[in-house]
Image (cartoon, rainbow, N blue to C red):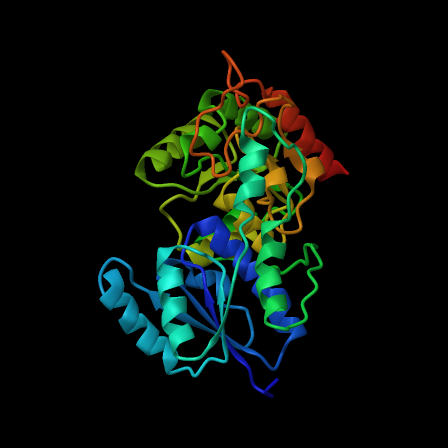
Length: 343
């Protein structure tokens, strides 16, 4: 193995998956300090990788510059200038396979993630379901580097990494006697979202208990919901649309705990080493997507023979008249948060 290896790392989306890659690359970089990493992902996700030594971020622009096969060939030509010794495809989609193929023809070693599709299908099917924990996604990422003959052992631990607060948020954190809870109540797929009327009950109880609450994650419609909650409950603050991703990560690093769906909020908190109480519906932590360093004991979910029926949460629950999310009592979530903060 050469003294200075260079690895092109491919993972373009989704937000939570890219944040998990960052958690793995932090560990990889500390254990392989002589290796240079070139992370290829969407420019939006660049803040996830700022603190990783020996890492260069290279943005893919799939909607314009790197659109189609010709666009991907342009990206390959740009990446080739780094003179990589290997490519780690952590995505395994059409784009990443196309880029990998170009590199293979150029004589560069390629290794690709095994997503365990057959196992995941067995976990989520209704009949003859094989209900068992599958390999963690972060370990599947690490396996690609192991196949490239690098040593990497994941600690699966949260190591505190507190960041300076943005100036606009400092005033909200001045009272250190009050516990600070982040809430990421939304998700890309509606079936992963805890019913908002019940989340409002959780919010009401948390504010009554004297906690300071910060709402993260979403677009315009989610921002409107968050702002309504802020007018309704004291010590509740909407961060949606008010801070950059880098600033949000810095704020998260100053929290005591995050309450999240099975969504990017969980993975962003994991990246900043903040414990998460997570709420699961048609998806399940057994599929391997629990946040890095998080505990299965902190997952709120119901036991039902039809769960899970989805890997990504893009399918509705099939548990019966009431969805598995509806069957979760708001007090169960509040009690778990109290237990974590007072434990």
